[in-house]
Image 1 (tube, rainbow over the protein chains, first blue to last red):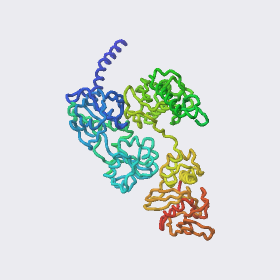
Image 2: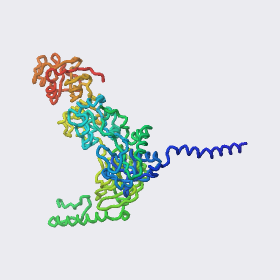
Image 3: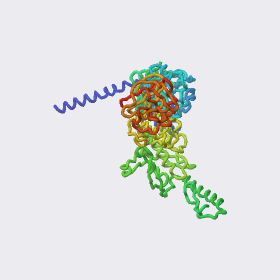
Image 4: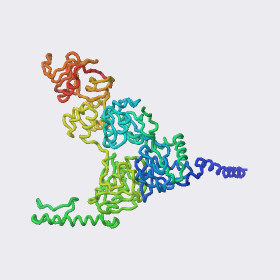
Length: 273
Length: 366
């Protein structure tokens, strides 16, 4: 009797296992004609939160960061896997996308700075907006006009000050800080009322300093967002990439990635108008 | 050679016996060239060839600060291996740690042109804590730069060049100096903080802990509820590093003054932003009345009839009560009702509090 029951259990287990395995693999669709089975992804290794790694012989090993994880997820959703990451240090070369040898380029590309020859841009996956970090004791601005009378500060050499001049049109010129540490000190001590920081960097900027800062609740619109480059000769369908990016956004995966690698999801910040 | 002392190279190695003054300079140059060549040869030799014990130091971390610890190791590779091994049990008990992950291997080490190239295993780059990643490169660079003759360090991981993995360091290039660690700020930095927060005039930032600094510290202590002694000690430093700009108690547009009787400070406010915080001493026993007033009379040098004394820089805001210069200005209410101010601060308040400037006198909640 006992032996019979064990045999039955064994049979159920043997028959049941492939079914469970099949259920698990349903999430990744099989490769289609548009998506190659393995992808080579081009990186430029700029922002440490977005992408970093070790360059060895033109390849990037030990790659990590928001865009690296995004590339892996996209590949999986497209039924492929990332074969390797290659290093393309120049964004110009990445945008030229000629004789590439790679199928997807991720390098914090802002399409508002110029188009790509021989390649298509994906839908935006990360904002290029500018976040506003106010000093303590100051109410979070509700409208762009609220920023106008404030003493604003931004990093020297970045886009934030230009954005402030063009969009906010502050009454006083924006003070430029030589580095993150000085910018933080200026907001902490109230030398400036609000710091303008690229939204993708604001999480790391405020990390560990929340107690001495005011709110990080708003952002100023600047362009559409960061996009991936899909070379027309790579065999990857940009529509399929956009479809999967949309799914990643809707199911909260992009937000989770941002919180992991950027310490804060900039898409969660309210847009000032 | 003054005093007949034996010449030393830049790194302190003795170059030879005493020399006679006449031929001194030429011989010193020759000896230096020979010594330098020997040192260069020693550095240029393959890593494995360096077998003699070297008394050096490795850099570990205690309470977030880099600390040099002596080590005796066979040459530079031995020193690096000793660094990667981390602190001993005894050192651990004394609070020493290492940001370098345990078990990080050295794949290769070479020296050329007085630059040490270290190829480490992938473990060196594990983790996402930016401070730890920065600290481990700092430890390696400090350890190797402490070796006499080493000018720079190149860090490689698994034979490749790390890009963006260690925030603050550009490891595509030779690293000559470690990034400065966030250390306890010096007098100048603390004075700058006091000035940025409004407790001190920007012109007073000079790196000297003088009377002006002490008064600014006293104003900060009063504002923060710390013991009022004017001494820039550890408690004040710690509070300063966490401090934000003081906020006014009332919300009103324009230029005005808030006099906080409990804290014994006066705030100069413009459009709800505190521009300056002054150390003051108001009337003892509640002789300075609370309420909202306006500056109605100003005298560059005012004569107090009841107390027969001169009161420079007087701005009267209620009855015979004024902001004015007086000495001393203790840390507690001591006057007959007026608001005593330091000689340095009184002219600033006189210039700010023009006729009609609102003055709110508050017994504030702390």
